[in-house]
Image (tube, rainbow, N blue to C red):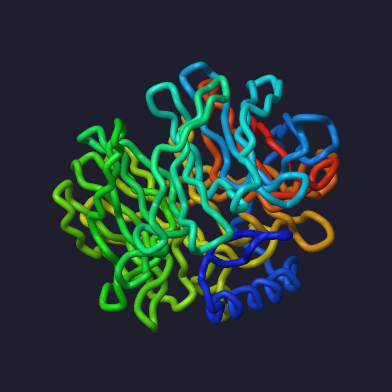
Length: 411
């Protein structure tokens, strides 16, 4: 289940039973925004600045919908991808400076409707992008783009192997690149794989999720933790549960550590870890608020795998449907919610700050509330902390031409 909007696919599930139910629920939640609020809510006057608007007719800026957020490379610039082209096909890779100077460095051709599928990875001077395709018989691929825009194909996946819906990649302790796919494998329920970073770019499937697994459909990138193991989440679990948290050893042994209790506790976001070994993450939906299904929650998992909810979103002014969280320089958690807040007319997302013990929750910005003109809507990708200690992020839509925005916020 991918969080894709506008003219794009709503879900990565074929057949669409779960996807359709989730989309219907989403419409109900949107209609109900503003009817509930979180009693512990604080509001901040943090300054948000729009660095770029996507989707106008200026040559080089026609691409839109920066779904997967930003990374910062060693050169100090930020890089990201867009999902749409002027004709509704393809996508692009772009560079933006901290001051807002924007450059499109590569656009994917329209062949097979190739679109970036996850956040970029900077590796050895190149930007590695998982690329999906509209057609199931072509399979996804991994593309490498130099900072000057020269692009090559590292690997083309077989449609019957590691398949559609690739997550972002990370660098493993052995120097290989590790990723997940939410589809593919022998059961079509996802895989964990690694790929060697040099020719011939050999791919090894380390684990195949199945219906007998506690969880399946891993949509988030992995985390290489301080103990040397890899940690990840799955979007879906057993029939009466939501997603799961799992651990994979360097040898490929997978252990499921936690099953989220609610049937709608979908976990699509990657985990992060603090200096004390605690893990943090979020569910995009689920939990309970005022006796009803909540709008997702941020959780903490101890080094002994005990899970605590830090903040339950209530489909109201505190936000709803959170993305992944990041640790700020002050030790607090920061994130965005795709929906909720006080934006007009129905709540178009927030930027929030949350203490790691859950005692303090602050909305730093409400999108579309009029405080910053054309600030965008639906901030559905994770924030990053820049080298200047500011937070940077993107909105999927909105802005001056409704193609999305890049923003900076100083908490």
